[in-house]
Figure 1 (cartoon, rainbow, N blue to C red):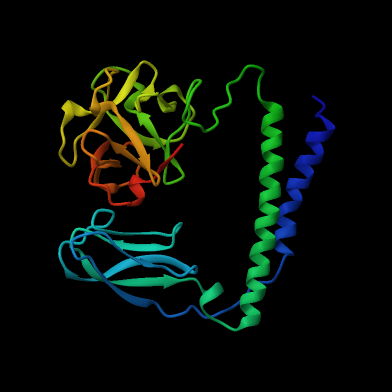
Figure 2: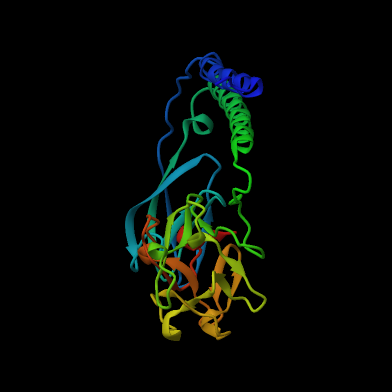
Length: 276
């Protein structure tokens, strides 16, 4: 079968990308800067410290007070460049930085930055070209599973950029759990927000099981009733229950496919950051 000329040109261009990347710039050698230790203590409430733009990882080096549990009483957010503690946790934290901005000579850093920028630009163009190719191949009438939480057939509610809120096992029945799962565009990941603050999927609503006000209460499907256990609002990327002021979260803060959801004290951890 003869291929469309436009698609042949796109494929040929994409095949050239690896060669262009290889010729962008030779590898840059620079010394890794030493790790930095930062001490941060919670006085019982939320406390945070600013992270530099070149920080890539934070680890708890030593607990100095309270009970420090990752994504519960301490954590970090590289998007907002923030290290935080809560609930009395105090610790000494090891800050790992990238060499591109944190060490080496200026010429090496500048060259590395130029190389990264060139790679990012080429990769971005390649992704756009590939997206156009997929759009051309879409079958007539095939649904476009784009994001967007309100109205119509609904859309995905994402966490961590790679997982979606999901109906466990695709089983639409009262009492079935909600979980996080790899985004796949199925009906079990299509949610819409109602006028009363309810979050709907098909004919069901997200519900705090049995109106339980405690940390760890499960979030399940239930027939829509307008009760406070089914009313939600958003605040700074968090989805907050109007029943108890707690946030939609993932059990143990572990963002892994198949882990169930719950409500938990709002602490701005990555497992409580959702977007439509």
